[in-house]
Image 1: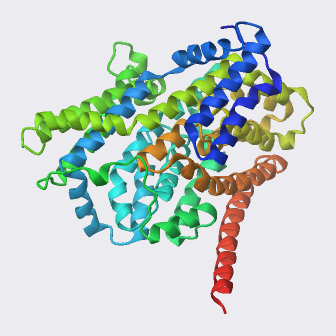
Image 2 (image 1 turned 30 degrees about the vertical axis):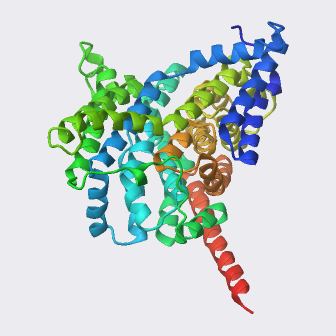
Image 3 (image 1 turned 90 degrees about the vertical axis):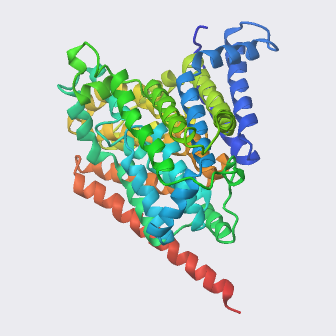
Length: 514
């Protein structure tokens, strides 16, 4: 299918989908309607096909082209692994052990955040693994699944985008290399880390919320419900699983540990580390050349084999029970898989058919722009595009080739800051978009209703992003002064969170006072 330049209409499908999802609280039909609105625009604009059959034909053609089966298989196998670990009693055994080590609600939250930071290789792997490991602990201390999803999501993409050895660093490096403006794409990526305000402030926000408990907005309501026993559990069958009473701690740690080890090996393997080409025989080069989805697919399958060898011979699960457990685990991932397919489809309709990137490029390059405003403007555009399309990788892939020459022409001193703003805005949009892969997987990994996850974390993400925007304005006018710009963002974030907490306390006191 030939692309069609739809102008401002190219952003209409994601706007429709996101608005419907937030209003109706139902994501499947919202995404489907958004997709069909885009294919109708394409069919009318190109004049190809019947208005009745054409949009449906375009939708399914795009869907077939955009499906990443490696991610679907990875998610499905990970669901199977989680389920059989529960059947073997590993999750219960881990919960009992962790209860002796993690003895407070604050510790459970900090442990969740710490594990999310530790798993920095890939955001998909992070989203599902952290939820699997920490759900039993956070449930014990009545942490809402919405908050668990927020912690997972906030330590996925925001961590990967500042980790020099990660699938995200590889993706950014490849885009930087293509510009030809840098002697070393790795060094260029590392130079963006201190100016990636959204990633850095997201980590600060997570720690602040975990330590102080200063929740606000929709998240505060979810936490109040959790204290009453309503954790907001959705798409999670672990509570009804009949587990083996003979399960031990090793039955949880060994399969998950194997998953981590095989994930690293899988990424290195797909990156050519064990191949014949010597240019990929270093860790950095191999990670830069890896296929994250394929490597993680291999890892989940290998971890499932480890679980089979560990559980079945010892009689924790019968052979038939293990296979049936795998099927049940795959079923639990069906909602997430369907959302992923629909999200990929709407993204494909916008990017490939309606040419949203070209529309954004026209907006960026068409008007006069003061150099000092460049970082803030780039951050806002990247955030909008990433939120609308649900992909950070696609967004910085679109904008980096545009931002580099624009920054070099307007103010070379702000090149690194502008690149950082591109990455930060892309991660912000990806972080809070309902159609983002990581947002969907965070909901699935935590067993949280997807729309609730989106609505509860949106206030936190917007607050961090607003502080970042001010920081990029300061950076632009101060010629990239890092202490001043980052310090401004940090002070703003701390002040607003504390101010919101004080306001909430006053409201509660007023409500109690006769």
